[in-house]
Structures are given as C-alpha cells and as structure tokens.
Image 1 (cartoon, helix red, strand yellow):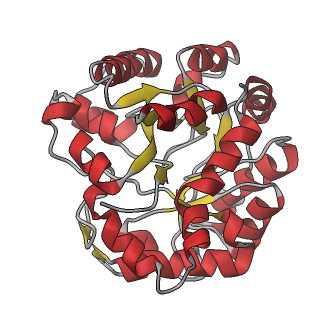
Image 2: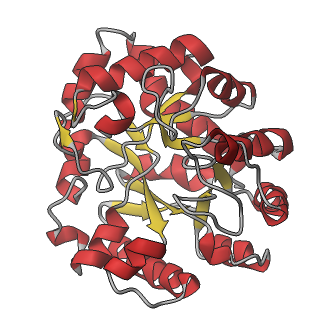
Length: 323
C-alpha cells in the first residue's frame, strides 16, 4: 500500500457507471473500492459529466442536461451510501477532516461542464443543495458560461459570457470551488480577475512541456499560485508528452516538478482523470499509486510529496468550502 494519502481532484467514474449500467462494487475500471484502498485514498472527487453534442448523439441520450445531472447525483448518492463502511459523502471542510478519524474515504461531488445551469443562477443553488462543491465551467463545447480551450488563438482568447461572470460571483458566495480545466485562456483570465476565492485547474498539465490547448502556460500557473489555487496534474499521455500514447510515472513527475519550479510546490496537486482517459498507463489504475510515489521520491522530499498528494488540495477546500 502507498504510505502517502491521496486526494484526487477528478475522475469520470460516475459517467462510466451510467454508460455500463454497473454498480461501483462490480465495476472494473481505473477506480474501484479495492483499488482506492490500495492507493491509500483520502478523498476522491467524483465528477458529474453532462454529455452533449456528439457524445449525447453517440449514446442516444435525450434527457435534458438538468435531468441527467439529477439522475447522476442520485446514482452517486446510492453508490456511496451503499458502502457506509468505506465512503463518507462530504459537503464541507469539517466533513473532510472528520472522515479519516472514521477510517473512511471522503467522496466529493463535482461537475464537469456547467451546461445544466442553462443560464439560470438558481440552478447553481440547486447544484449546491445536491452536494456539488466544485464546478468545471465548461468541457469541449461552448455553453452558457463561455468557451472551451481551442487551437485557434482567436477562439482561445474568448472570455466568459455575462452569465459566466455572474456565476463566478455566485459560486464564491455559495462556497463552490471554480475549476478552469477545459476553459479558454480568456475565460481563465476572467476567473482570475473576478474570483474572490482560490480557483483550481482540476486536471491539467504544463503547456511548456506539452503544447496542448488544454494545458496551462507558465503565466497561468503563476496566476493560480498568486490566487492560492492548485493544478491537478492529469495522467493522460496526450497532455504529458506530445505524440505519446502511453503515460509513464516519469512523465507525470516531470510535470509535477516543472509546475513546482514555476509556481511553487504549494500549487501542485493530483487530477488523475481516471476512467476518462483511454491511453495506456504505467500506473494501470488507482492501485498504481505506490509506483508513482516511488518515482516522486526521486524529485521530492517526503513533506513535498504530502503537499502534492493531499495537503495542497485540503488547503483549498478549507479556504473555499463553508463549514
């Protein structure tokens, strides 16, 4: 077992459970109860992803984004409460602090793509009431918040829409962490200028090491640090090394080291994107964290590893989530 606790900021396990019509206890993907225990999970963020456009068509999804959201949260609630000996659903920083004393894994509900908000601020309150504590504003398609990252410099520079700006203030008020992964760079800077709370990139990497539209520039990484935010390093090979179709522990650690050097050790975190990535993985799945930790020991001290693995994320949770 890994000796360092892990907070993972992003996975797509709920989506796979829906697509495969399976319970977590019978699922065989990157994240399972057994694998979380082997990897020494302290907190796992479970994202509600809303299929739109081509994905919705491919899977013949006709539900409205809001109905899809509610049905997925119902699934999350059923799965987590069916294993009370293992999981504790968490809503605030007090819950997160309490879970380890009960030998339980914190299960944090998040969103990837806020299409379901549909331009109505009251829906953000609905998301909060259902337990959502982190929201990725966008995925790969334009929505009511703004625009996705793009290879086009003009498109990538587009900022948040007026509703997106209103939503930043509302999320700050509610105590919801703003997640800028997938967002255009113009949108990133709008969040930077308008958020009064720390914000994060839950599953992104360093653009200087891998020139992908989803990755963050040095300037963005330093801006995250300035605001007390974090960047969860994504384990997908496409974001780690140009042209790579196999993710190695060395590649992951290389991005961690780079982000620490550019923005400080307090800015580095983990955002695996497990069950949302299709490349080969040296880690294989969540049970591979002991191997990643061994690779990290070549670059970081034990106290620095703890910061990356869980302490930096817990700091942001404490700063943003209401007790």
